[in-house]
Length: 420
Image (cartoon, rainbow, N blue to C red; front, side):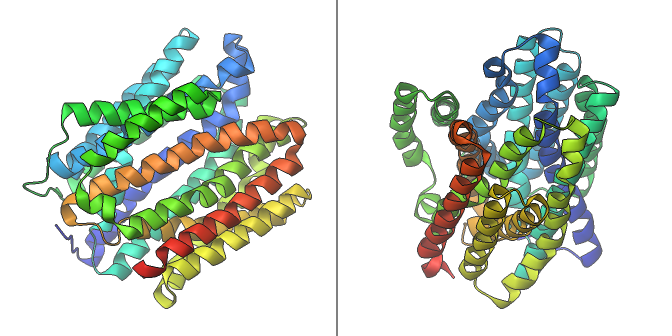
């Protein structure tokens, strides 16, 4: 189904879907900022404290594909709202967690909820027409991500120092609940009759394969990674044929490592480095230019995509990201953050549009499930690789991220030439 809305209606839809992305980005950053305080509160070693992030990543990465396919089969609005409701439950449980294992479980519940909300939000945007409207909504969602980046780091530091880390979850819960209620009222149901329903075997294989890969990457476990890769083969065979053959989707996935290493790498390495000498609030304030740059870059992306093919826009954006990472390696923090923010915003809008550009209406949820799964696998890879690289110093970690940013840009452009 292609969704064509009146301008006023499109604005409302854009706001709801943007808030969904805002919450996802905001939650990730506030937890990253609060991680040292959480570890201290439960007396966790750093290696154990990382499960606050890993539990979320494993559940999210393992369920995104299933969440997208369920949206195709049962309705994207229904799955988006259900996912947000589960996310709220996870937030509340995390806020009252009485032991570390309860917090880890709550984070996993949040991951399951986000896995149903995120791909169906993007699939809903991909169905919007004309393309100019779709690109503007993707840009609005990226702006929301920028606000989440700017607000998440600062708010996370402020709340952690002033009220304690538990209020990060408790204060976010009513916001997500309001988004879910609004989405249920304003979004049209986008369901394709006859779309194949995800079987229990396929869902179980997808969850197991992706979860094993995220776990293996995070914990440097080659044996578990091998098992996860073996399970990927039957999962791919169970995907709709159109998704597997979609060249635009494959090009977007090929470009993802470059984008994720640039943006997530900046946040991960930067926050750890800054908190050696700064408080959580000071570190968050230092990262504000990154979010502001994302706000500027997102609408810029929509304009560039109206004038140039997406591969050209993406390649240029990744070059800007790489330049920013080199500046960060040289400890030129402000210009480095600005360039990474601008480049990452343009890359995000471009890849989001490319991933669903040629997807069949019945397969959009599955396409974005694949895309988002790849994104979160890359996110786990960033943590694993750059955590090791940090042993050689933050400058080396930033330079490594810059190299991957350029390689990802080249890979996406090379595979995407035939899709423009």
